[in-house]
Image (cartoon, rainbow, N blue to C red; front, side, top):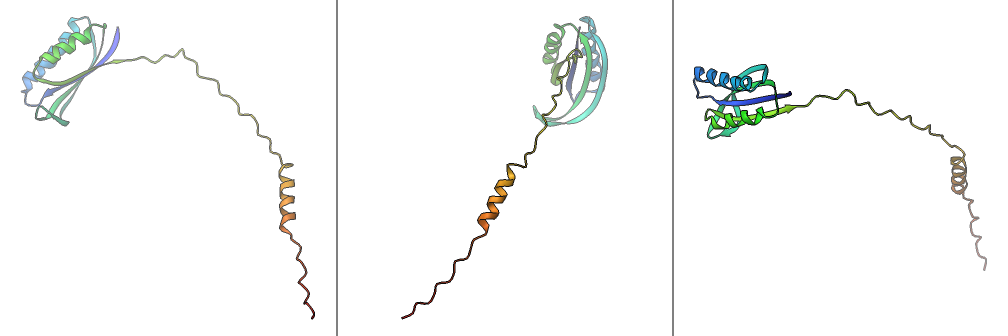
Amino acid sequence: MNNYEIIYIIDAAVEESARAELIEKVNGIITANKGEIVKVDEWGKRRLAYAIDYKTEGYYVYVAFNAEADLPKELSRNLSNNESVIRSQIVKLLEKKHSVKPRPVRAAAPVEETFEAEAPVEAAVEETAVVEEAPAEAPVEE
């Protein structure tokens, strides 16, 4: 069995009794197809991020369930045929694999600092910085 999540949005104009009936119908489809409902959470009426068919509000419902691989297709088909459902999305949850070993951390090679190469360069710079002054030209006698 695989783990799934479904979120579907019911039209906010639908009455409360019809909404509860629709939620029970979706849950019934899951259990009738040998699925196991883990959690049902009604998020309530919320504003949509963008208008869908000129509707700006919807009633959000979240269901987590375990089922065989063919159930999401059947559930999606039933939700798309129902006019009260504005949008729906079914997601398969992936399990983490604990058997994967982490990569070993490589130790960085020690960096050897060489001061020998820098010393002659500094000495050369000092030598070129000192310039002997040329003697001033002697006046020319006539």
